[in-house]
Image (cartoon, rainbow, N blue to C red; front, side, top):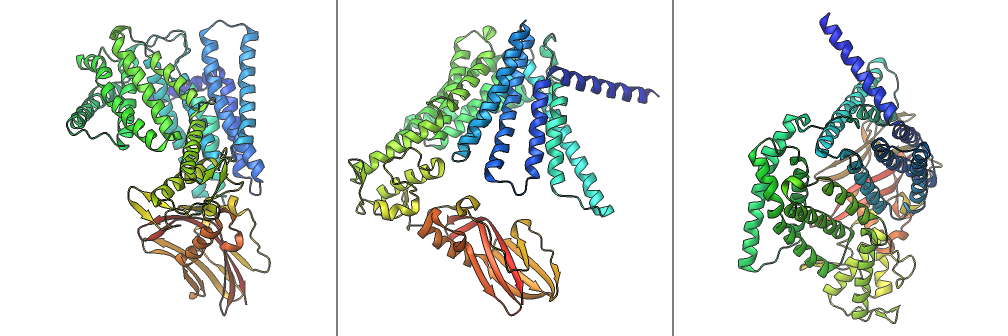
Length: 594
């Protein structure tokens, strides 16, 4: 009886938390639910156009940003006495911002999808930090306690959501396998999308500390204290010793740091800064925590300086890229936090400085004309232009062929062109012809694609990754006149009964290569090594580049029992020491029985 009462109390407590979460954050919950519904629509949209697909994706991303923006606005409203008109104005701002962001994504995401996703991720990070660190919370004491409780609630929410998804997926699988009911594979995706959009937000918000709650350090979970104080802090100390030994070696050998140092120091400094944030609420736990909190900000400055030395060397040699910009921005943040915590008395430090400065740096890195994407593009264009002018290829703004320049210079020019093509599609490169691609280098510049880096040379065409998909091909597959079609993307080897017998398809990939095999009545009808197709496709790409067509990717075969048509709609080919490696491919097999 007592167990039943405890269970009832637990269910009632959960119900109250879920209700409170729904009542407290209705706007964010509605946005999450709307994003979930649109996600389900997108999953089930089979013959949707590219424009409509981009519209739905833009709406989902804008609703996610609006979801986080609404949480920040709610924190401001809870922490301040605001009139009804002001509150309505703030909610209108949230809705307007989300709408305009969706319009922006729809119009600009097509040509710079990767960078727009970087910008989106940065906005997600900023919104997440603003909410989980309670930057706008009126009572700022023990801010790190709020972050710990919010982070723990997020972890529990993630586990519960995955359990719900896994449980329902197992039920669907059992219904399909045991009862013979055909379950669409998309139902499994529907389950996780609905769980993330409807259950997860409500459950998460039910455990967020309220404005009037006291955030005492003793509310931080013990295992988290042990993790930060007795695991992360000692590891960071040992890592610091290694970096100081490395710095001494630089002084003795006068060998400046290379590029790998930047990433190593960056993660070390970021983890250290985050640890300092949480340690502020644990300094009563041990003298070791206090000592680490006082001295780590001072000793981390030297490794960060090494980061900037390595970064400046890379920028001087190769110019700015988006990655180097972000590396520098993160370095500025960690250095600023270290200097602040080194100068300000330990007892007077405000952890809000760490979180606010992070949000400012993140937003400045992706918004405005100084953002990482624009700076990287302009830097690489300027360096390319200087290279072309210096080698008499760009004269008075006009491109002239020059095949006599050294291979090293050809490699440098190729590297700049490849970066601009893959990341910016030559946006802003006014001195190159319209629709220029790497395959046009011989015709426009006078020399072919050349890889020459750190003494490693490759023949023209050998050092270039090849990525071909439906967007490049821009065509449909002609299937008229054929009886059967098989999609390699399904990876299904089950065959089909025909009037000539059973027809089976097999596509095997292993360390020895890829082999396609088609069987009729368990007798080989057709077999082929996929590398033979890849050789032909690679040759077509080298000669045509992005002008490659679906016809260049189509292969015919004739057997006594059937006519075959093999149509590739996408491939990835990477160069290696054996020639090339195929990373991914998709193709259709069309069969006409004789």
